[in-house]
Length: 443
Image (cartoon, rainbow, N blue to C red; front, side):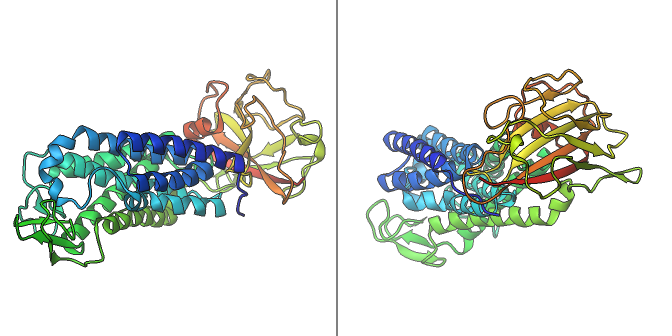
């Protein structure tokens, strides 16, 4: 089910995109067309994706821009080989970040799927890997070798790679992967190692495909005056008209960069789709001693409407919950209540954890305190408050409110006041069993 768009968040995304793009324009990192393209891209990514998406895009843009400025002098000797300078124009912005912009739209249509975010992270990791390899590769003391033949070529030659540059590419991809595991969307509950490895390797693969295309299909020219290969056309930096040497004339460096990010995003999405059943713990799929963990509520049945008194239009108290089948190995229980249909992405209504494993349910009207008298801690919901916050959707179609109970092999000593993202990160790899109950509410 697709989610509706939060115009407030979109407006905030526009404001943030304008501030960052104008600052980059003044600093010389973006041309005028590049700044306009960055405003459009940033508005979509920041406004529709929120913090997890914004961090990835900013991580790529800031790190690559800093490297371009830091090593500008060292790169001057090979500038004549590149089709454009370090001041990105609209085509460069689209080539490096356009895939992320399209994928954030896919996330709006499929809000519960982790695939668009993972693919976007991989695409930006590839863009970052390619940029780091280009900016840092010129520091290598050795001449590069063509990726297709191993032949020694001049520094800056398209398709040329060095061990130093490849390590720089790996570092650039790993940097975006690190941001991905530090700032994941609340709905993404994949193992940290899996996310880091998938994004890093996909990003490195994208950068190698960039080099492969640069050595084979990219349009490369030669300057008759300087007798040098170059991406520049129709004029070389010396002013001499360039002559086609190899490659497809329609495939310039921007097209190669777009293929780099697209290939990485596609590889990550394919790998995740194939291995998600292994990486994810499916609901109600864990068995301990032949028993299945189940959860229900005396107040409403699974898939039925939640009574008004448990919502913001009523008393706004938590409903009574009951469960059974907790694995004997469990050391604690956790409960998260989420609305995947909320404007702007999944909205968290309740975060509760450190519950003793022998607990078999919760009474109605749990107090809004960080520590519970019978054992357990409560975190901060997306209303910004501790404890339960009832359904309060905007007028329109019904929203789903998913109560998910987790049996964990974690000792009940997690700090109080955690939000859902932090709790999700701590639970990864420690979930023994889980069960869910879904209620509906419409205003």
